[in-house]
Structure formats: C-alpha cells, structure tokens
Length: 112
Length: 111
Image (cartoon, rainbow over all chains, first blue to last red; front, side, top):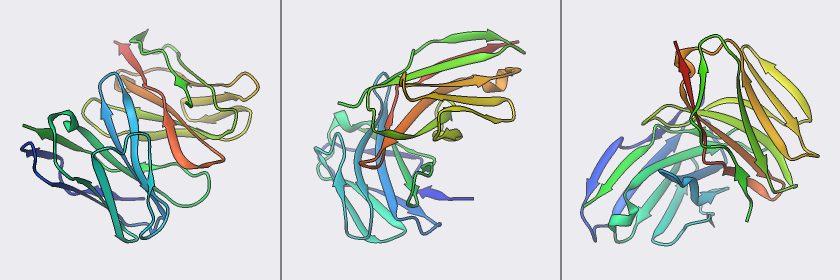
C-alpha cells in the first residue's frame, strides 16, 4: 500500500511565523500535491510537483511556497503565516498515468 | 474555471437502502473520475475510480460514468451506518494529473 506521511497532525503557530509542513511518500511517485480544505470551499490545490525541483502553482498559491529537493519529500512553506491560513492541509501523491491520488492523514494548522 | 458540482446534502437514507450520489462537471477534457470518502476530521480515502462510460462495480459500490451528459454517480447498495461520511467527486483532465474536486455530498445512513 502507498504510504503518504505528513509530519504533524495538529500544529499551532503564531501570525508572522514561517511554517513548514512536510510530506513524505514511500512509493517513488513522481507527482506530489498540496491542498487545503476549508468548510464550504472543498479541497483547493495550492501547489504540485511532477519531478524533483519542479513545481507548478495550483489555484491558490498566494502566501505559500514549496520545496522538492528529493523525490519522496514535498514541503509546503508558509512564508509569513496569517490567520486566514488556518486550515486542514492535505498532501497527496500519485505515479504517472491516470491513477488515483493517495492522501496523507492531513495537518490541521491553526494560526493565532 | 473547471466546475465540479455536487449536492451538499445531507442525503439521508435508511440502513439497507441504496444511496445515490451524483456529480456533474464542466470540463469535457476530463479523463479520469474518482470517488473519495471522507469521515469527519480525516483525510479522503479512495472508494472507486472509473475511466470509461458505463458502470463499474466493486462490492457494494457502483460507479457510473456518462461523458456525453457530463455526469458521474456513485451507488451504495445495502447502506450501513458506517457509510455515513462526506463523498467527494474528483476528476483530472488531459492537461495534467491535478484533480478538480467537488465540495462533497454528506451522506447519513440511519439505523
């Protein structure tokens, strides 16, 4: 089975802090994704990566950046956290082709 | 804008009945279609995927796809209280592997 591991289930940070969310997958997948999920808004794509050191903006990239230095790890960075970034963050991965994405357990991030 | 529409519900069905969840989409380039189940506070888990027009069955679940009419549905037979969750419809297109998600339908199966 595919295993996607997010470093924290719950995280509390302060406004203005730089926040790192880590995601690791163990299936040598090429593609990795970061979403956020908010009530009434569904899942929205922040960034994705289709290869090491490659990244593409999703629908809501403002205020975020990403890093993919190794194939198995995809990091989401909140450069200067704000309260409107309080959300559930979900990482996913998939191999090439029209295969399903596999999700990690999610990180519930609160910015105070 | 690629729209994926789902009725938010809640859809309430009695235990043992068939639950029918529907999804319509606007992007005719959509190639692959997925249904995820999400329990409250948890991450989405894959239920089924379908690529071709018609029906695909897996246990109590049947996915139906009609590309001409741009809808995809999920039938759950013999619904159980443990099926109570939010069901997310998602699809990608030939422009990449990123998924477009609907906002989900909340299903409540009552004993």
